[in-house]
Amino acid sequence: MSNKNNASLSLQSKEWIVMALLILMRTKKYSDITIKELAEKAGIDRKTFYRNFKTKEDVLHFYLDRTCQDYIANLNKEPVLTTFSVAKAYFLTCKLHSDFLDLLDRNNLLPLLLMVFDEYLPMLHKIFENTRTGDNPVYYSEYSLSFLTGGFWNISIKWIRNGGNETPEEMAQIVETLMSYSL
Image 1 (cartoon, rainbow, N blue to C red):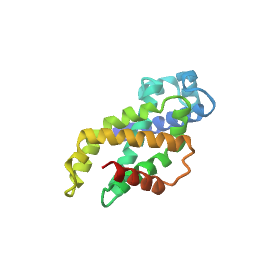
Image 2 (image 1 turned 90 degrees about the vertical axis):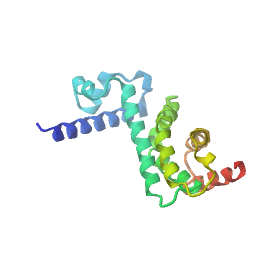
Image 3 (image 1 turned 180 degrees about the vertical axis):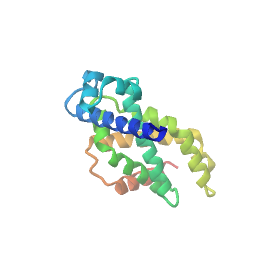
């Protein structure tokens, strides 16, 4: 079998495992889910699970990485990065993954998103640096990105726990308003 087919099969297995984990998390606490149960739900054997992941935490990390990559893809769709467009891309991503974020919250695992997001800060810093047009350079420093991440983190938790009723555009407007008060 070619490497391309192997990669495709591996990705398909990973997708099945992720979907199985999400399904199981709807009815069971994450801590109570076993690898055996996860593999069975995914329709694979444990050997296939271990070929793709070492632990069920790796499954979460895989999906969290995808969430962050989706955010970057949404950012790249924006013609100009402003406070509003950055916030809109962020909340579009949250809306896309709202079921997953809700499951993480119900299992007290939401902080994992912040940890993974922090891994992406250097990449985000470069994206913002490359689009800066005379703004205050402090706004784009790594410290400021960390500071802003905390704000996005807290407001997104509030939004998730309130049911995500506001649109991403409404949330972006809220963030833009808050930023105008703080800068």
